[in-house]
Image (cartoon, rainbow, N blue to C red; front, top):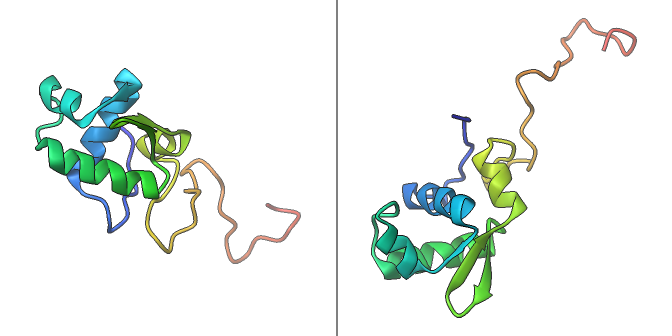
Amino acid sequence: MNKRYSGDWMVLADDRILEYLSEVETATPGEMVKSGFVRYSNGYISARCQKMSEKGLVNNLGRGVYAITERGEQYLRGEIDTSEDAPDRVESSTEKRPSAGDTKENV
């Protein structure tokens, strides 16, 4: 499982919704409730999907149908940070960070 970098605006339900949408591609809040995987009310799921749509993690396809975006998939893989003040890209632990003694030739 990847480490995820969730913003202060996110809640546990958001992860469940994104995980579900990643598996099924598109769904309504009602379908998510019926699945048993997303154990929240239809209204709460709808509100969270609207918030995640504003933040670019899901697309509202109309008529209450939502789909995960590439940005949402990147969040699930731990590749982006959804914090308001964080840069989008998360530096991988395998990427070398220059130390104080490194010069351009060493990096």
